Length: 518
Image (cartoon, rainbow, N blue to C red; front, side, top):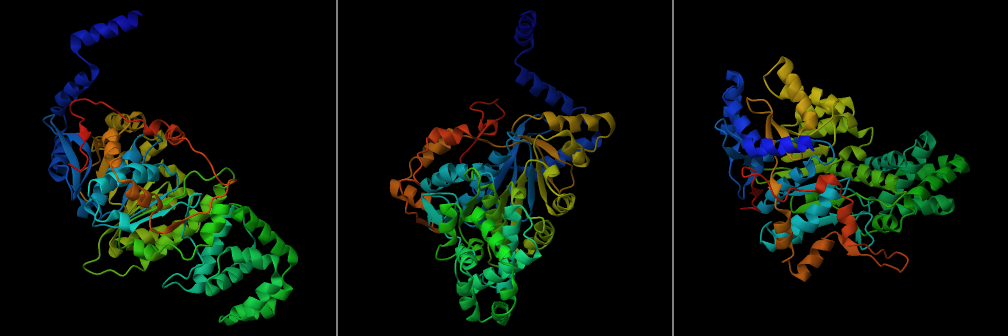
C-alpha cells in the first residue's frame, strides 16, 4: 500500500511514465556519441517516408530532435532484397508481416506467395486484409487471381495432384522429390530398398498422371502395377517390372504400404491428391496472391503437414530457379512463415542456392521464425549473408548476443545493456537493419494497425464476392457427408491465437494508428 501511494504521488508530481520516457529519450539524444549521432541522422535521411500506395511503412522512430517519423521505403526497393524476421511468440512479428503484405498487395502489381506453417498469418490475411482491399477497390483484380491452398479444409479441395507433371522438370527428379518428401514427412528412414520402390512407383504415377493414391493401390495389387509398368515409355520402369520387381521382398512392399496408410488416412488428403491438376507455382510467380495455409492440422496429422510443406516448398523452389524473366517481369514476393517446420534436412543447402539466385529471378524471399537457434547453423549463416533487411523483435539472450554486432557502434557495458534490452523489449518494438545502408540496426515501433477499422471495411464486401474469396481459383467444393461435418464457433479461432494477437487499442500521441492505405 505504501509503495502504491508513493507511485501515485510520483506520477502526480513528475507526470505519466510514458511522458517521462519520452522526455528522457529526447534529453539523452543530446548525449549521443558523435558517431552514433551521425548514424541516427543517416538513418532518418535514408528511411523517412510517408504512408501511401507504392511505399512500405515498416514502423515509426524518433529523430534527433525527438520528433517521430514514419520509417519505410518504396515497394520496388523493399522487393529488391530478401528479408528475415525473428522474434519470440507475441513480440509482434506476424502483425509486422501483415502490415507489409497489406501495402504490397494494395498496388496490385506484384505477385505474392505466402506459405504459412502456423496458419495465424494466413487467417488474418484472408479473413481481414484481403476482403478489406477488395472492398476498397485496391489490389488490381485480386479476386480473379487468388489461389488458396488449405489441405486440411473439409469445405474446399485444393488442386494438389502432386504427380501432375511439372513443367521443365524431369519425371525422375519429380518422382524422387515426392519420395524424399514422404521420407521426411513420415519422420523415419524408409531404407534404401523402400526408397527405390517408392521412387519407381511414383515415377510411373507421374508418367501416367495418376494420383499418389494409386501407389497405395499398386502396393496392394502388385499384378496391376506390373501390367501398368510394362506399358511405360520409360525402359528402366519396364525393366524393373519384368525383373527386379519379382525379387522384391513382400515385407518391403507391406512396410511401404503401412507407411502410406499413416499418410493417406485423412479424407481431405486423399481428395487433394486426386484433384484434376496441381497448383502451378510458375503461374503464381507472375500474378495475384497465393496462400498455402498448413496450420492447424487435425490431431495426429502433424506428419502430413510436414509432408505437404516439404513437397510444396520443393516445387516452389524449382519454379523460382526456372522462372523466365525479362524487363517487364514483375517483382515477386515469397513470405515463408515458420518455414523450418517443413524444412527437410536435404533442403537446407538448397535454400542457400535459392537465396543466391532468386534475386536474379526478380523474386524476393522473406523468412519468419521465432529464433535463429531453430535453424541449422549453415542456414543461419546463409540468411545472415544473403538477406538485405533484418527485423529483430524480442528474443532470448543467446540470439541477442548473436546479433549484438548489428545493434550499435557502442562498445563495452553499453553494448551489453543493449543486448539485454533485446530480451526485454515490448511488443511491436524491433531493431531494423537495412544492410545496404551505412548505419547499424535502429530501434523502431512496428505499425499499429487499426484492426477494428479494417474489419469494418472488410465487412462491406458483397456476399457473392466474399464467397469467391473463401474458395479462390484453385479449389473445388468438397462433397461433405454428415460424419465429415464439423461445427466451429468463430470465437474458437481467435481464442487460440495467444497473446501475440492482442493489440493496443490506444497508444501514446507519438504512436498513431497506421492509416489503412492512407
